[in-house]
Each structure stands twice: as C-alpha cells, then as structure tokens.
Image (tube, rainbow, N blue to C red; front, side):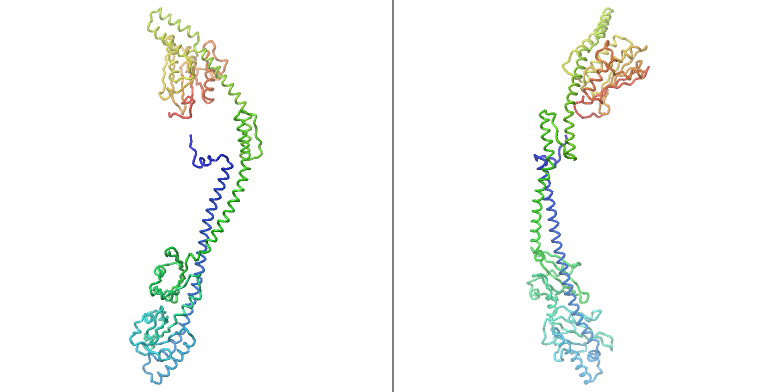
Length: 602
C-alpha cells in the first residue's frame, strides 16, 4: 500500500475539514504576510538607501559645481594677470630702464590691490620668475629666504601641467614672509615671450575658509558632513581636519579613491557609513559626502511597526472570514458524513439533500445512487453465491460417472481372468486414488498439481481400458504447480476430449495437458488430435442443454460457470478446434488463484 506523503499525514491529524481549511488559510495568510513584510522592509530599506544616495549625490554635485565655479573665477583672474603685458615685461624684460620697471610695478600693484580688495577670500597675489624677480601683494611683502619656491609642490605642479594651471591641496603658505596661513594655492605658469619657455609663475593664495564655507553651506542629516580630497587622496578640506592631522580621526580614503562607483558603504564596527563621491574634471578633486546608515534609517523602524500592525489586522480579518467560508463549504460534507453513518448502521434508505452543483453535490448524488443500488447488489450477490454453492454441490455429488465406474470394474475383472495381474494392480490403484480424491471434500480449492494428479489417475484408467487407442502427455511448469484452483475443472474437459474427440478416431489418439504462466495469468491447456468440432458445436458448447447428463454431472458449462463465479468474467474456458484435426481447451485463472494482485513473470 502506498504510504501517504507528509502533507497528507499532517492534514490527516485534523478531525474536521473545516479546521483543516481554517488552519490552511491562516498558514497561507501568515506566509503571505511574512513574504510581504520581508519584501516591503527590504524595499523600504533599499528605497531609503537609494533616496539617500540620490539626495547626497545632488548635494555633493552642487558643492563640486560651486568649488569648480569658484576655482574657475580665480583662474579667470589669473588669466587676466598672466595675459597682460605688464607682468611678463616686468619679470622677463632685461632691457627696461629703472623708470620703466617702476612704472610697470605700479601698474601691477594697482591690479593686485584691486583683486585683493574685491575678494576677502584672497590672501596673497604674487608673480615670481626664475631670474629672481618677483612682486607680491602691495609690493611690501617678500619671499622667505630659506624656502626654495621652485621646489614647492604647487609650483612644480603648474610648471609641469599641460595646461600650465594647478590647484594645490590645503597647506600652510610658507613661501611669503610673515604669512604662514592655511591656504589653497592656484598657480599659473608664465611664459617668457622672448624664449617661449615657462620661466615664471603667477599664484593666488585662497583663504581655506572659502572652501570650508562652500562645504558647510550644504548639510547632510545631523551627523553627516562633506570633505574634499585631491587627485592623490590628500585632504583638501575636512570639518575635523585638525583631528585628522592629529590621528584622532580617520577616513576610508583608500577605499574611496579605489571605488569606481558614485557611492560606497563601509562597515565601521557596528554602524555603517555611506560615502557619496563626485570628482571634478577641472581640479581633479573628489568631493565626498559621509552619512551614517543608522541615521538614514531612523524612520525605518516606524515603518516596520506600521507593517506589523496592518499585517495583524489583515490576518485577524482573514481568520474570521475563513472560518465563515469553511463552515459553509463543509456543511454539505458534514451532512453527507451523517448519512454515511446511518448507512454504516444498516439504514440503506438514507438520502442526502443535494443543494450544490460542485464536486460535493456530485458526491451527494453518487451517494444517493449508491444507497439506491446497494440493496439490489446485495440481493444479486446472495443469488450468485447460492448458484455457486449449488454448482459446487452438484459437482461433488456427481464426481464420478457411474457408467465409467462400472466399465472400469468390468475391465479389472476381465484382466484378472486373463491373468494380467500387473495391469489389475495398476488400474485398481489408480481407481482407488481417484475415488479417494473425489470423496475428500474438506477443501473447495486444491493446488494445481493435485488437480493434475487427479486427472493423471483418471487417464491411467482410460489408457488401460482403451489400450493402443490413447496416449497422453502431462507437463506442469514448476512456477504454477502450487497455484490454487477449484476442484474438478480438468476431468470434465479430459473426458470430453476422449469421448467426443479421440474415441471416434480410427488411429491412436494423443492427449496433451500442460500448464504455464502467460502474461500474468495461468493457462492450462487440454489438447487432443481427435475429430474436432464444427462451428455449430463450438458456438453452443457452453449452453446448459448441451451437457451430457448420462456421462457426467460435471459438464463443461458447469465448469465454465464455476470458474467465472470464482475468478471473474475475464477468466474461464475458451475452445479452439479444427474439424478433423483436433480440439484445444484453454483454462485461464489468476496466477495467485485470485487472492492478490501480484503477477508472475513469464
């Protein structure tokens, strides 16, 4: 028997379909809610992250744009100074007189003064040349003697730059005496028109607070902040720059510089930090916005509580509705169950009211049809059992044809008088075994080999009576030797083969009996080479009026009926006959005698 699967066993523990449906609906709803909440929470978190990244990106891009605009303005100022004829002549023209140089210097200082007065965020404006000439601010400041300006990073960057322009990182300006302020230097190389080479530099020192103001004017949450890195990863600006230089605060600069995306999340021991970057094509600087994810997701917990509340309300509603629906769906089933209990107690006149057109209604109609027909089936079964018992009783009462018995005894007397003592002993022994098997009636079925043994004793007697008129051959496949079969099914067929086939043959007749498994059944064949039968006899061989009462009470029709009653309509006897060539009777029974559904391989 096939074992029920896990789901069937689990549902089978419930005592009612209603409770099964209620629990199933509730479980599905809980599962759906859990899936929904997981998806919703992940979507919410993802949306918050995405919105935060977009928001921070907009701020960072705006800061980057503001810095680029500021630097571009300073570049325009440096461009005006560098492209004027006054600065190059003052720095590089060796043929000027003192008066001309002084006039040039005054014009340049006027320009420098105008620049410094127009912008409070400009600390220094200066032009220097490799030949030692320079002019700074209002003409009063001087270069620091112990500092080689040409070795400074911002100086070399401008000289080596393809465009001739460079913007430095934040640093202390130590090239000018009495300055020493935190600045960002914008430098531009100056070309000596006489040689075509870069032989000087114009630079503007920008107040560090200008970049600070641009970054601080845009806020990112409460704890978020903005800082700026140059192309090499050095800090241009950081709100806690002093702590950075003191080693009291660190940033993941290496990861930021290596990142090829616009955002990066880094775990920092219990809390994650979201970095959003925007790199300037003009300066090469990277503006970085930093915010803690816990701050970004501070509203996520409130959203989760709302999800739980809504899910709980929906679950309660589904349970209530499911209870009502399951009760109404199972109402016809409960009615059918009660009616089946009445039938179980013998009340076959029970009927159920069919009020639906679905599967339950179809089941109710089938139940009503079953209760209407069950009584008729019981009566039919009683009738068939009575017929079967009558046939068996008749077979037992008429196992041996008295005429056959008389002839056998006469043959024994004749052989005894003739002195054929061996034949007398053999025939008498065969008759004794035949009678013993016939009289023994304590079982309805015997093993096939027992039935064959009975027929063999019968044929032994017949062969001795007919002398050279009869030969027989018997073979039983060992695989079917112990198959159970009802008694006295072969002897009538063998008798028919002798008296209606072989007896009227002029030459010796041969009779073959063999049993074997075929296609999950057992075939027992009784074949003779007698005179055969015509089609008319074949068509009526199983008719009741055709049996020979004077020869044997257990005729072929009787055997056929007993086989079909015992094993079913698909089993029994079939005949094959050719007029003048012989007849073959084939009995088919189940391989297990009708006891199980197992089949034997051939």
